[in-house]
Amino acid sequence: MNARTIAPTPGALHPYHVTCAGLQYIAMATSASAAILSAIDLHGVHSASARRLP
Image 1 (cartoon, rainbow, N blue to C red):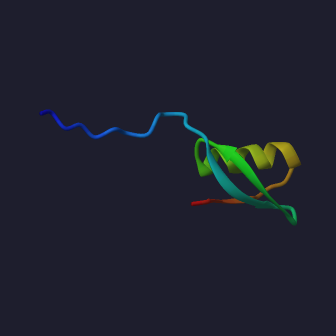
Image 2: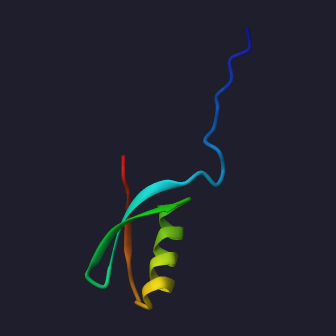
């Protein structure tokens, strides 16, 4: 029997808790950096943070 490890699908979306400009919301993104870049672009701010939810 051949056992294989199945890696997560590249590009799979995960929920992230995003904080920027006093706002907090849940965003679906492929990575924390993608969530942060999206928040910066969407809200026109200079910084944001994102934390992956379980």
